[in-house]
Amino acid sequence: GAVVSQHPSRVICKSGTSVKIECRSLDFQATTMFWYRQFPKKSLMLMATSNEGSKATYEQGVEKDKFLINHASLTLSTLTVTSAHPEDSSFYICSAKGRTEAFFGQGTRLTVV
Amino acid sequence: GDSVTQMEGPVTLSEEAFLTINCTYTATGYPSLFWYVQYPGEGLQLLLKATKADDKGSNKGFEATYRKETTSFHLEKGSVQVSDSAVYFCALSEGAGANSKLTFGKGITLSVRP
View 1 (tube, each protein chain N blue to C red):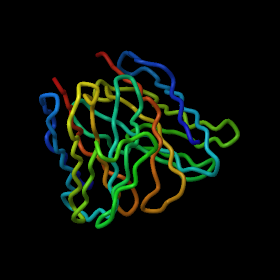
View 2 (spheres, rainbow over the protein chains, first blue to last red; view 1 turned 60 degrees about the vertical axis):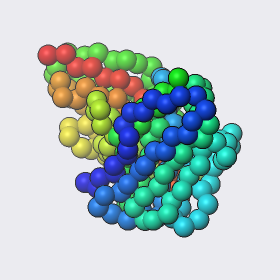
View 3 (cartoon, helix red, strand yellow; view 1 turned 60 degrees about the horizontal axis):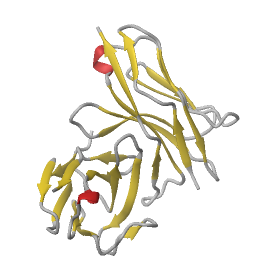
């Protein structure tokens, strides 16, 4: 099946710094990518929908200026957590929409200390 | 809004036991329904899906039937294996467009012991 690569898989950063997470579709072009956040024992919560070449659509309650999303090409979307704080620590997962189904990255465990 | 409710976990079974994981949903329209599986250290993978009422999705011995009257999509397998140990997510999607979103349940961890 199609492969979506997410990098890094794990990152620890200091409070106040920014972290960039990359999501690549390796063998197909994805006009739409999704970014999710997963809390312990909670479902995946959709943060934003990213469309190639246009601004992302954020879900209610998600801060646009804090979670910057860029989808500059058909195979790459990035999520930047700006001025990270300990409460941003979480598991972030990206998904790329193929023709008939969505494919998911392996996820990124972010820990802010 | 749309929502998906899964039974509370975790679930621990012996190999060859029968598995049922309950999933019910709330949606305004006629959603497509999915089960995703996440093996340790990997991303979510589509396990099976059903796009309309009474459809049965099946894959790798797992089955789920889209029941509109009970708004359910329970996952079943007749004989589980150790390799089935993973986290299982029930999800729905309204519409088939490129921007159609997935709404997930909380996920349930299945552990199968030899």
